[in-house]
Length: 272
Image (cartoon, rainbow, N blue to C red; front, side, top):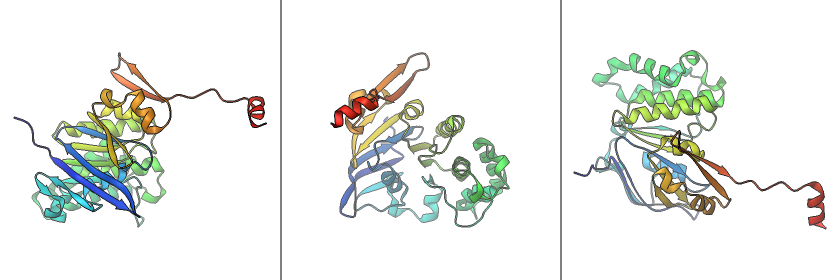
């Protein structure tokens, strides 16, 4: 029997300021998988993630979770189904890092799960390695530290759908690997993860599927090896790209090809 999608997008369309940002996107997400959304700047990655989470309303088309459209879900029930880490981790007031992580438990207020709040929050902080930051004021944290605290909040929310918008952008290598490995671990319990990434090598390492967006449409979709092809990437990113296969580690490394720099003399001659 074929598994039913946890989430579906059908004919998703959205225009902003007269420009098509999303153009007739069909997409299925299944429990237990990580899907990476990749593509050049302005391709529609963050907008599509926001549409999937219900934070942006479509002009036409539908997005459904467990067979019900986003509009059919109550706000609080939706908060128990999906958690979101936005690209910019902003908090309006000077909450502590611990306060921010605990915000992930607010959808469970008034339920039988509230008794587990403290243990869930502590586990989330340990998983994201933010325990040492707990008493720090959130606005005083570095960009990478804020991202980790925001990720810990997502973990504390304990939802079957996890949406991450460039969660590793401000992080060093160690924490990039930590965050994506922790997200990957959640799929073992049946969760599904959609993550926007610019680092194609990271996408190759952690995603089951990659969706390559370009100008608001899906240009390619499939396994990392199916999508991360030099000719496909070079066309979409409008820059020559090399893909190196590392068989020992089972990974792909995506690199831009860099022509030799002009010497000053060659540049001077070229301008004459």
